[in-house]
Image (tube, rainbow, N blue to C red):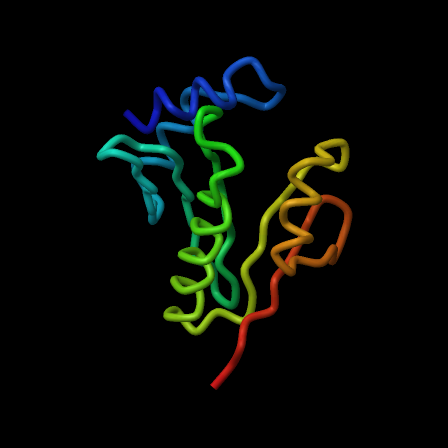
Length: 123
């Protein structure tokens, strides 16, 4: 189900890869948002030494503007804090203005071209 959701949301966009998406879904920590017991979005997270990276975050088109994306970011932030990560990071293409705006509204800041970061609270 999640692969189909990802394909509907991303398939046909530059950089889409069936193989990469299947690898991400099969090997990373994934949180799924549901509406009426159906997947409405997910976030796939890859922990590293000091950071957790959002590898994929998507919301199905029929559930955009319902706060699901923000909920997924909150879950990702909670996961990263539980791992004692210094930051939550995401790579966003420079020409993807809607995604850049979304992450900036969520508190992420640019740290290098295409890389946004949210500094997490430390003990």
